[in-house]
Length: 381
Image (cartoon, rainbow, N blue to C red; front, top):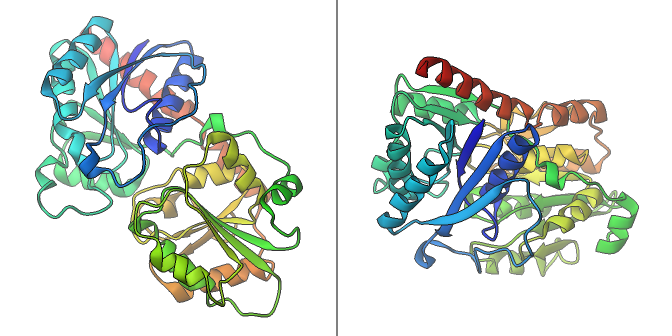
């Protein structure tokens, strides 16, 4: 199968860029001919709250081709990308979609693909943006999606949103795959030593960009409620802050959080993630809103249980008491109780976590693309 994937790729960084590379690598590993069409410009500076959109690390060798053709603000580049995809003659084009801002560009590429006889598949990470932009972007939530297209998503909540916006469009839910390129593990004792974490302490770990919907403020308030006596604990918030952190700085500078919480305010390189995950007792994703998270399958890949907000599709991938705990969103008391449970020795099931990780491979996703391509080929005949 010849496959075109439209999505951000290196040197662009972040979860969607990782997802693009993982999808392309997994498809290539099954013998498919894969080309990624990426972005020359992703977000305009006005819409990007971080320090940089680029990964300074050199590109890894990948088993697929990649070209940066799309400028999100330049319609002529959309046509250039469409012509390049048509020249490939792919059986499928998969369009990564995570924010309605990109809907006009992707709709243009999808329309050209349909006219050339290519089947269009949307990988829908979200319908609405995480930070709501009022009604201004609402007309773009499903813009460009046609009834004959197929939408794949990692959360049932996203599937239900799409079903309401585009009745009759085929939508399928496939578990969020764990990133195979980040699966290498480190020794926990060595990782703790490198990070300066006491061997006997419970370590709560938050990973990823810090945005309001991810609830780091809720986590800090919950940590402040842990009882002073008992097993020592530490917490690390590892990821670049996309919101003002002055309140967090003040909170961790005074008791009861003083000396116990580290804010590692930067983008973590791939090789660093294994160290933080190896050192962690549990990974905490206290989201107050959201659809799904790549952090959960990543935690499972490293044998770590999770404590997550009961939002979006997260309850679909957490077995309470076995692979982690679910807490009501933005409920400081409930999150504090869950943290205290882990601190007091709450055990989870390594077997269940391993099974959850085994269910999070890329194989079902690529097999679904193969099934779609085969069906499209039969219809064409």
